[in-house]
Image 1: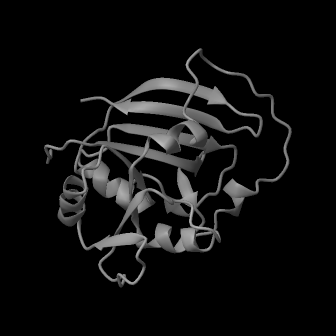
Image 2: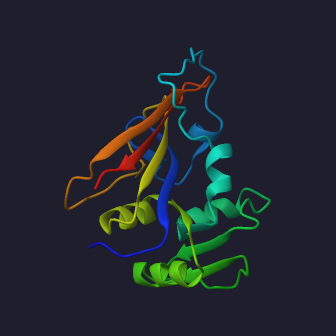
Image 3: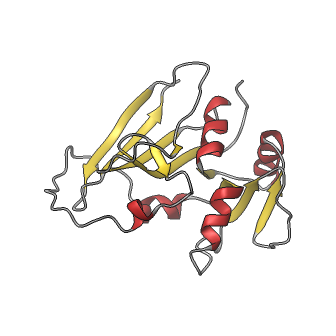
Length: 186
């Protein structure tokens, strides 16, 4: 199903090389505090993949799931000041004035349209999967971490059709991450 919209849906996320965004218990220490392993970093093309510092200022709205929201709350300071944050959850109570809680995808789309969203950061495995299935993702930036977890929370889940991607840029960082930015090809 395709929705007419005035905003761009973008993903920016880290994943293990075998496609997991967290361990089964939600732990992301392997991503935020990886073991020191020597890597040789070289750019693989002339167009540099998006970094958090180049990606985040472009964003005016975020949509995330309850699990991602609860993980962000453990970070200490709220990292999304001056951004409108929508949390997609069927059970979360709306008692945090920094967020707007919506119960389903249609409510999220309505809220984004009502708030005048232009650049939307879609975060969290299930939310990314939901937006992909609804053809609401236009660009995907992934930092592939040099680790195999074997099991955990998958970045991508079931899709009822192939999603073709066009590589826009890629780079390798000093910590061994392979960062790639893709456009969703329609």
